[in-house]
Image 1: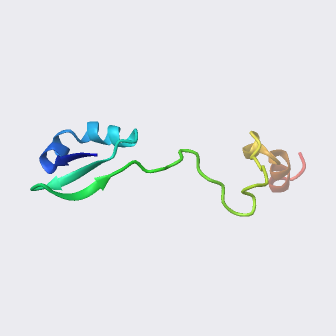
Image 2: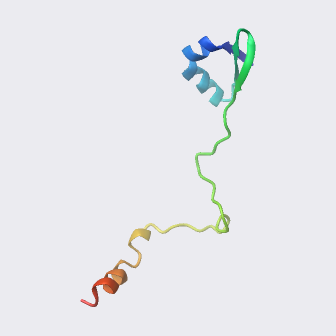
Image 3: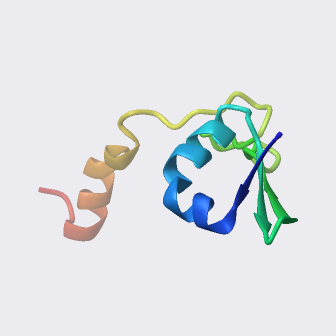
Amino acid sequence: MQTVNIHQAKTHLSKLVDQAAKGKPFVIAKAGKPLVKIVALNVSLKPERLGFLADAGFCVPDDFDTLGRDEIIRQFHGEP
C-alpha cells in the first residue's frame, strides 16, 4: 500500500483520491508516522428502498403529478 506524506497528499490529492476510488487505498503520514488510511466507500449511486414497500415492486406512474387533476378542479370550482 502506498504511503504519502501530508505535503504530497495535498499536492496530488485529486490523483490519489481517484486511485483510492478505483480500489487502491493509500496512507497519509506525518514525519514518517502513519496517520490515516484512505479507502473507497462502498456507496451505491442508486438509493435503497426503505420501509414495507421495499420489496413490493411498487413504482410511481409517470403521470403521478396529474392524477385526479380533473376531479380536484371540479371539487374546488364546482361543475362547469
